[in-house]
Length: 168
Image 1 (cartoon, rainbow, N blue to C red):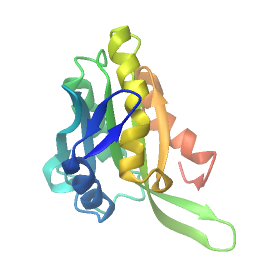
Image 2 (cartoon, rainbow, N blue to C red; image 1 turned 30 degrees about the vertical axis):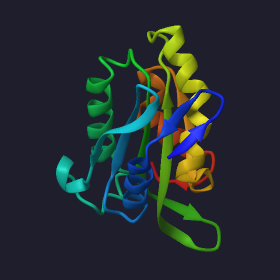
Image 3 (tube, helix red, strand yellow; image 1 turned 60 degrees about the vertical axis):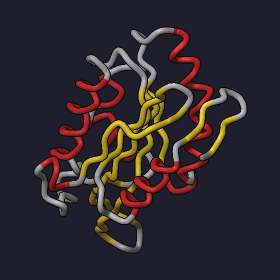
Image 4 (cartoon, helix red, strand yellow; image 1 turned 90 degrees about the vertical axis):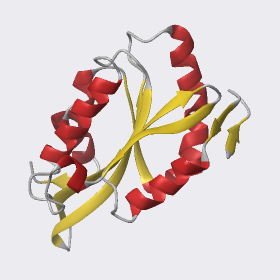
């Protein structure tokens, strides 16, 4: 277990194991939540679990991402509760000197919606560094969101387009 001294919240070892599976391509997304004094896996889904093609670079993971957002919305009671999540985002982009490339980037989402209690938002905010450190934050792109509009597929593609020349 990985301890965040600031918040006293532990990251369960299963969180790291599932993240390694996601990094290896076995899982498409993981939703984490704080339960008691620990960060635990709420759900972990593969492409087969959500019924999408594993080779969805051309549509920038749109179908898989929408399934993920629907699941996240259901688990947070309409985006009124906090969660952490990671998603394996596949997309096609234009890289200078390399032409069209298929890329995978792991996106870490810290969801602290305005509708959540202040106490919960504080615990999630103070524990975020523990889970990111336990997962290996150098591998992931991080986004902090407060509502559904900030987490839409279009918004994520726009944010990634700032770093990569994505074909929209």
